Image (cartoon, rainbow over all chains, first blue to last red; front, side, top):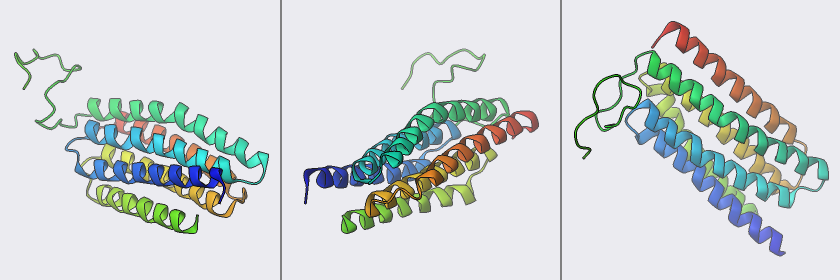
Length: 115
Length: 86
């Protein structure tokens, strides 16, 4: 068993655990913005780790190039998509959970003291 | 490597199960959009794990296409929510 196989196995385990974390966070958080926070960032890091693990394992150079393209695509599109969904959700009037205390977009006065 | 990728598939499937639960429950349309996006990301991760398992690069073009379709779908439904509301 070579060293690159061991590295790629570790990367696959950590990346898939991050994907699971994204799913659990999406299920557990109370409002749309919190769910988006959990569903966007950890799976992106997990996808990068798993793609690096696959780069270490594929047999052709063309496959490694496609994996790098996927990483770049995810880094470019994930923030843009999350930003569009967050703005649409806020402006269409989805209610924030009461555990979300700071609302920088609202016109109301901010609370005196944050818990 | 077979054992590790099997474990990875199990973890990804558990994550997809939670995501599906949110997709069915999700009170608002934005929740469902976020859940669909995460589901496609998990699918892309699964294809990457599969290609790391076999060492083949046959399915990698599917990863690129699924990632792009996920982004376009998210952007379009976001525009739709913004125009229609809720």
